[in-house]
Amino acid sequence: MRPYVIAGELDSMFNNEKLTGIGEVQFFKANEINENDEFGGFELIYTTTHAYNGEDSKYPLNPKEADDIKSSFNGVFNNHSNGL
Image (cartoon, helix red, strand yellow):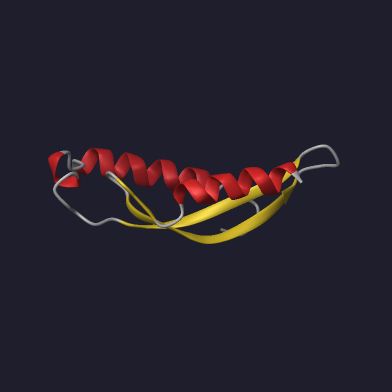
């Protein structure tokens, strides 16, 4: 039961929230993770809509930072075995 409570708490913190530098966060889907009999959990996936507003435009990403973020993101999600 605990993983469901934690997932619900995280969802209540992030879903439909506007975060500086990220934009609006919306729940997309969840996957169950079963590594073995002792370890399992959930993967919560959210989409973001980056909207430039006064706060975001104070600290825009430079091209190098944007490339680093894309590379890091692709490294994480291309290593998953669940087909993302």
